[in-house]
Length: 224
Image (cartoon, rainbow, N blue to C red):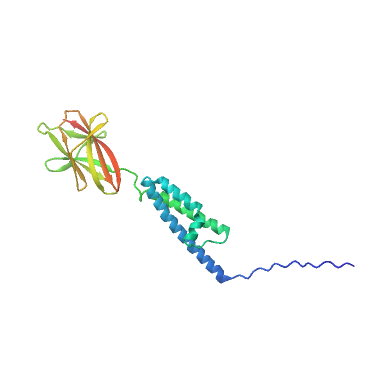
């Protein structure tokens, strides 16, 4: 009678759980995740700033470069890299999503204001500045028979401080001539010459705030 061959394959033995090593690994993972998220947040804000300043192509190149060499970047910065593939993917995804989210945040209020300043005109009325009446988008300037010119000032409403401004007057269709003006304490002072009844002056006001230039066109209608 032939004896059955004995199964000599080794029996799998589950390795002993090392709690200390597990806790150290989890702590390193948490630390590296926080560092990666913080780094991505700063890079996202920087990318948004570069795009606002017109260097969107540079921000895009840096973004692609960082994604392609993500783990080499972590090695250079001596940031712990997880051993498991799933954990590596989570770290990469956190980096990518955080960068994109903070890039978007940097491009929108309150970090970035995309609207233009509001401009309103006031008239010197017996040494007192009063708001000019308006109708259908035009300011109304009442002609006085004894006046050769009128003192006007432009006021600005904006989230940032207006640091400079000037004004031009349309003299021909589409052609503007710079008026003599004085920008002082956030107001733009200038004079308008007497015009005939029914004439409309088109004022092109240029403003500078936070390193950006804005323009606004105001219409002044000469009325009796």
